[in-house]
Amino acid sequence: MSRVVVKKSPKKQVRKGKFLIQNERQDPFEINVTGRVMWALENLMDGPCTPINRPAPRWSDYIFRLRGEGVQIHTEHEEHRGEFPGTHGKYHLLSKVTPIKEAA
Image 1 (cartoon, rainbow, N blue to C red):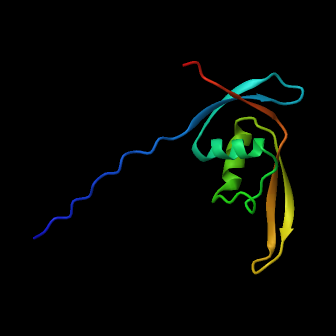
Image 2 (cartoon, rainbow, N blue to C red):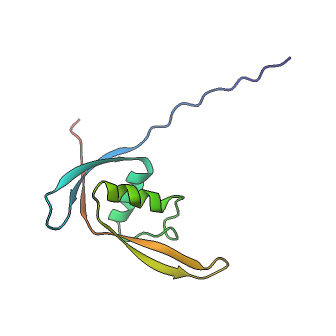
Image 3 (cartoon, rainbow, N blue to C red):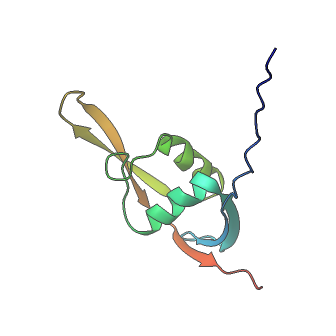
């Protein structure tokens, strides 16, 4: 009887980041985000995002998590045509977000 040996792959490094969030009429505060949520925040810092122009499987979840951290994001609903017409969200970052570099 032969045995199948399965090698465990090394764990992937998860990106982590700290950001300063400034909302109107509120004191600034810091958040820590990781992985795809951090990726989404960095993309939002570059301008409005949609699942069409920045494909990702769970944009609505990333936005939900960022809002839970206190980041202000506006959702604009856009129609799209084609083989599968419908609507999608276009996300606009309202908060001022500044990356915080950790001291080495």
